[in-house]
Image 1 (cartoon, chains in turn brown, orange):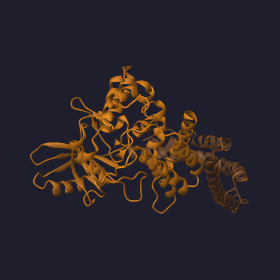
Image 2 (cartoon, chains in turn purple, brown; image 1 turned 135 degrees about the horizontal axis):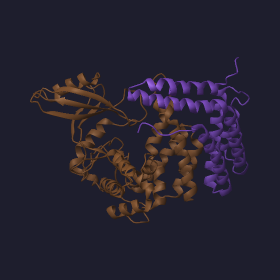
Image 3 (tube, rainbow over the protein chains, first blue to last red; image 1 turned 120 degrees about the vertical axis):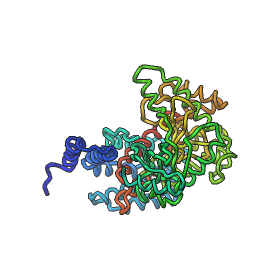
Image 4 (cartoon, chains in turn red, green; image 1 turned 30 degrees about the vertical axis):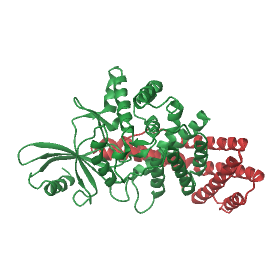
Length: 152
Length: 334
């Protein structure tokens, strides 16, 4: 496998091709707009390609840690089932689809745990959930990079 | 002239068979994220000319935002009698899409520019945008005070404001169940929003895409409000909350929130407890519910055989952006 340039570098090179060489040659305003949107999507994809497996695995660990903490205090059967489902994912695989699968399972367990904490009025657990979500938003902001609304 | 021109000409022959309309120009209008729009110039047999706006659905399975064209047509037909707010004259409707390729409205093209453009022009020449901001506020206050009994029967009427908010928040729970990647944020936000409901106000007509770009102003006559596709009966404050996230500059709410809301309260008779900056922030969450669900649906459709187009991928950023705003609102108002 040819490892250099890395995937993100390849995508960024495509972005430059689109913006510097192809966009100036377009006269149709609708096509121009679609190309600008495409370039934005590719730029976001470059950021994701470089980091998304690591980001999802890190957050999966945080989501599950939270769910376990809630289970330890409010161990309802549905919550235990959600946590068991999260544990049934292909956790050892680094293939992207498997990592995303585990991430979504962990997200469901987290949401169930959050609901239990909210219903119990456990302010400390709700506050901890907010911290986890704050980290998630920080990651998504990195992906958004230079996003600006076009075409409205 | 693209292929739409000849199709529109055949449509005119069907709806105005005695006038001999010829389409002499037809061009797509760029901008906007939902419907396909075009501007067509028509010369009638008697030599007179008119310009029309054609507004149709994108091809099935493409696009991000969906709405009911029949409902929009019915509302446009009802509004002149139901409200003091003016709209462009709705002339014809290709109800089946037989002529224009998809269900499409045909409206008079007003000799007017968007209020957003006027606000931007005022900013460029360093003129106060306050009169334009007042016009914007007054226009939407008038929309919100439209008597509901004059609106089409097909528009769902929630029992009251509380029930309406409950239904919107239940919608967020439904989205959380359907889109696991979004479940953590949506569960957090919907729970928070249930615990922080503002004082209710009477239900009203909500435009659903409240922004100055959807208000046209000309040298004479009243402002014309366009793009009613997301209109519904709900809590009027969601229009204001929705406008706070419109990124086009200048945003006259953020220029002076207190002034904006003082004007709105004066026009509607609502109290400061019902309408204040905190309440309007809350209603950003409510006002984005319909569009957020459609963004999530479109994102889920990426990669399928009937792909929704590049807009769906592009607007994934908008989902992230919304979540960041929602959580920040929860923090600020807690």
